[in-house]
Amino acid sequence: MNLHEYQAKEILNSFGVRIQRGKVAQNAQEAVDAAKELTTETGTSWFVVKAQVHAGGRGKGGGVKLAKSLEEVERISGEIIGMDLVTPQTSAEGKRVHQVLIAEDVYYPGETETDEFYVSVLLNRGTGRNMIMYSTEGGMDIETVAEETPHLIFTEEIDPAVGILPFQARRVAFNLGLSGNAFKEMTKFVTNLYTAYVKSDASLFEINPVLKTSDNNILAVDAKVTIDDNAMYRHKDYLALRDIREESAIEVEAGELGLNYVDLDGNVGCMVNGAGLAMATMDLIKQAGGEPANFLDVGGTADAARVEAAFKIILKDPNVKAILINIFGGIVRCDRVAQGVIDAYKNMGNINVPIIVRLQGTNADIAKELIDNSGLDVMSATQFQEAADKVQQVLA
Image (cartoon, rainbow, N blue to C red; front, side):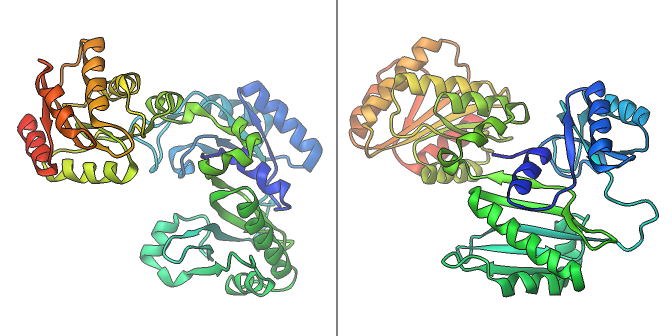
């Protein structure tokens, strides 16, 4: 689950990570009220207005602007709220902005002795350990830094049995070129950041930039946080942070139906049981000259109701030109799946794209007979290559 910047900062702050303070607003008047409160609490007279969407590169799209007065806060907030923000991480249509974060200006007027760093915590899948990735080149796309100046990216792997050790936090601060109080503040910042990552069951904590102010404070100016959905049962309070407006409407609907669905850009819909088979099916479609339109795992209970729900989800995508159903009958019986396909087809009555059904495993022979004798416009297959050939045939 992705979080907005203001939500991510609230989590960071709860673990003792110093942050750029701010308040969220849903409209221009709330933005002005938030700015007034910030002035009272922090003394700031300039404000940063930040669009709250689940995408990076907001500044490049005009979603982050400096306001030097309350009048500018009102005007800029009114311009940003309701806009379709296009960034390097959104589609061409962009993302609709529903709220803004009014943040204190932490770049003090006339200040010249600031530094910006990049710090993130994530899983190194190659070693199975968490790692801290950091760089002196904060405020830039880390992908660009990795491509153009890879020697400026450092990593620190953490042994999960003991967690982050003091010498590792100190090494991060040393490699960032810090000394004195800034060095001490960075070691504390990194230690608390790692604790927040572990305790919140996150899959990513990315702070870009981390700012060293002229008075040697270290704070998170931005924050991108992704919480592991599989651990959400331990963090029921985090469920309230989910913003489904930022998610694909089809994916949200599929989730409510208990289907594991990811929307893609292709032309062949997939209905599969099991994540591994789903990935193989997507490869199969690619090899047949098509492009997968989705990842859809119906799980082990592929009955008529579930199959019908899956059909409806797939057919909401106007780009789908064919549907490939690929089921391995281990726990589930293939004949039940076949009957589910037949019943769903008859119930819906408006499926106007070719359907290829490959059922293999328990009672696969009975399932093929059911499909072949159904009188429906459904093609059956038993082998992977046979299914691929039929996908190729219907796309020709």
